[in-house]
Image 1: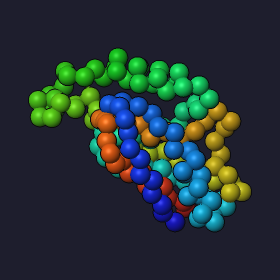
Image 2 (image 1 turned 180 degrees about the vertical axis):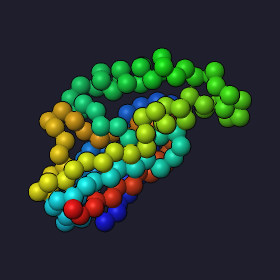
Image 3 (image 1 turned 30 degrees about the vertical axis):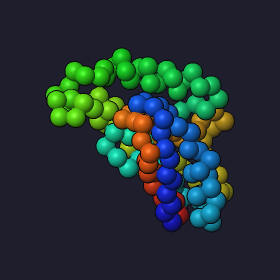
Length: 134
């Protein structure tokens, strides 16, 4: 079963909590055991599982990536100025897979699923969620 999530982003770089939307797709699927795949469509976005209790962690992720992959110093920047966005996306990765047991994703208390925007703001970002019976 496959579902989709569409969000708008407000900043050049940011983490957006999509856990609730993913949970709804999982519940609607009726599948109780298997895997949940969450995939970001787009070459400048990613999916990350990270702490959801304290927003400072999300800010720290953006700060770390900015230090590791600064804006404006990459060959691709000569074409459209977003070389850093592509590199951040590639480093974090476009997807995560979460085990599904008894209808519950096996995330811990402090984990949640985030869409990572590295080339915003964007009016429309798409995430594909696939629930695979197991």
